[in-house]
Amino acid sequence: MSSSITTRATSRVSRRGFGFGLAGLTVTAACGNGVGNNNAATIDARVNSTLNEMYSQFPNTVEIANKAAGMLVMPLLTEAGFVFGGGYGQGALRINGVTVDYYSAIKGSAGFQIGAQQYAHVLFFMTQDALNEFRQSSGWSAGADLEYVVSDQGDSLAADTNTLRSPVLAAVFGRAGLRVGATLEGTKYTRIIP
Image (tube, rainbow, N blue to C red; front, top):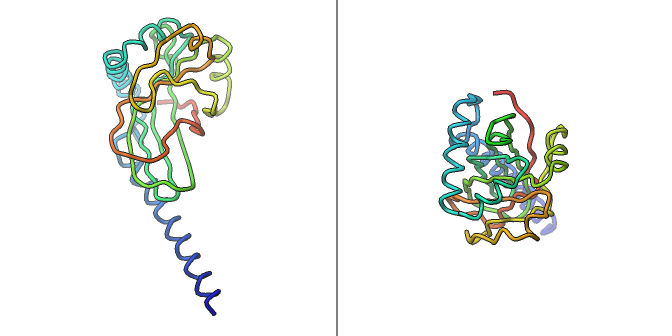
């Protein structure tokens, strides 16, 4: 008898967690991160603002940007979750300072997590091969091999010759809110038409 009560309670918790996860995705869509707003001019304005903020807060990124073959700038990624979670944002790929394509970022996750956060991030493609692979994929996913040039404590890391040899570098900054275990790993980027 206690076994069936435990099973029902577990089932309710799982359904409740799933419901909260779906609610988190709905909240994510309503947080001003560009959902439903594919206007290229708006995205470009947000990208410019994000780059200015990054360069002023983390001067080491100026040198990295100058050496990069291209940069994917995501001005705002909103994540929310309770057991299940997700995130969404829109941004632009820039080569030589010019927008060449627009992208969305989608992230889904499961496991222990609670809360919501918003942050900007920039992917620096340090080699032409890495940039070409990103542009030619139908949906590129960030892996565990990303090298971060801004640590999770907000400290700038040196742009030394070892760091600059990594094919893809990432800067994550401008966080609002708090969420345990945030990372770009598993974020999927897909080209969009604004």
